[in-house]
Length: 157
Image 1: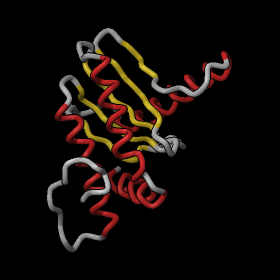
Image 2 (image 1 turned 180 degrees about the horizontal axis):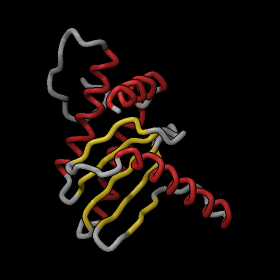
Image 3 (image 1 turned 90 degrees about the vertical axis):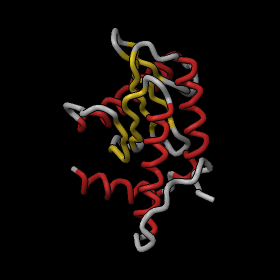
Image 4 (image 1 turned 180 degrees about the vertical axis):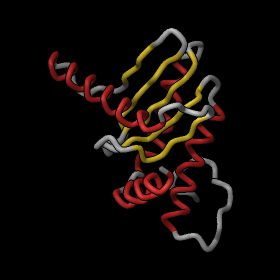
């Protein structure tokens, strides 16, 4: 069974290195999330230090390099606001705009899951599904997988 505890990903190249297959599976999970949740058009996983690890999008982003710093910056600002008020850890940061919403949640290792959706997207469903995704895949963001994702992201740029 896939370590992602979600439906099995499509069979990959049997000769591919194990790290490459895990990257393919991880990206498949993000793509499935994007395609299964109405209104979502961009899903990204960002490392704790602000680097883009994986992304799935249904639109051509005019500035893909900004996805990671925006998500990281929002999480940092939310954490600072929480610390200032003594409110405890931040569970979710939601930026609501006229035509869309950007939600950022922290994964157990400090990574971030950032999801952009259209304004009409049900926020409760979006939050619930993001939490489910983090619970299902957060444990697989091992240092080895993060390193492999970084390497693959660097090659894609």
